[in-house]
Image (cartoon, rainbow, N blue to C red; front, top):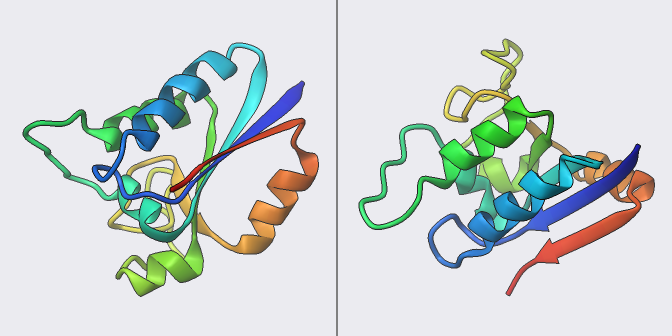
Length: 126
C-alpha cells in the first residue's frame, strides 16, 4: 500500500489547514496509509476538550482519522514547549493525558522515517 504523509505547522484555528488536511486524509485513506505529523503550533490540534464556538472541532476530526487507521504524531519538542508531555502509561492509544485518543507525541526521527517511507508528502504551512 502506498503512503501519504501530511505535515502541519499551524495551530487549529489560525488557518483552515487542519480542516484541509482532514479532508485530504479522509479521501486518501481509501487508497493510502496516511501519516500526519504535527509540528510547531499544530501540536495544539490534539488537545482534548476544545470547544470552539465558531469553528469545527479539529480535534474530533483528527480522532476520526485515527479511528480509521491514520497515524497521527506530534513533535515532542514542540509539544513540551507548549506544555504537553509524553508519559510512560498510555491511555486509549495516546501517550499524553492532554491529547485525544489514538494520537501520540513522538520525535523528529519518526517524522524522518515517515518521510523516507512516503510515496507522497503534503506540507500545509504558512
